[in-house]
Image (cartoon, rainbow, N blue to C red; front, top):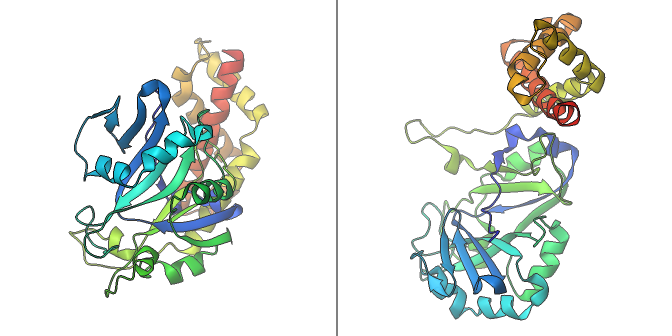
Length: 315
């Protein structure tokens, strides 16, 4: 049974490619991650937390905040069964309310709720945001609150990052310091990054990023940090070319070991970065230590991707 857990989401600082995309920004709910599917070949309803199966083959596998009862009481199972075009689609959502989360109050009277934030089709592909909105509206499922759509403006995100939860406001919860967990940001249309991973990021509010051992201080992303990462990425795309890959492979096979496989990745990267640093000495000479690390990482990331493609074609 294909019932994969949800995508790992990196922090926005590690996902500078998003700043080149038309994106949708939604509220990040501080609940617990769940997944739902109607799979006729697996007994019908299948439920899971992020890491475990909760319900399958018409049997409860583990207790999880009364989630099975919630789904049945709200007839979500019947909705999924009835709409056969969505059989074997996985609905990912955030389950919250009552004792599920701490730090933000979303509902009154300990009521629990579910918001869908993504759908993976039976072929394994995630759907685009507008399709998500249309499907959930048609099925009567609520989705995570929409905040904004368009090119990301960091200043605008920073202005809103410590706002109170939209979910709580919709539920008429009146409470001071009811800060949302933050944002989830992804392209309007599904997009992969240079490593062929989903392009998606989170940006948490100060309240939810603080370390318990440290005083509370703002941890807003600075525009210059994003620009530095983008500059490094563009430099890598200019210098790590297919022609250079072939040349570096030729260099590393001169040591008597002519094997071309991913086992030789460390040798390849060392030669690649040294070659580029020598050719572009004037660029690296102007970089401080931290920026130098960013450039090396960008070169390595793209280099590994292209080396893997070379190995698959020639190994």
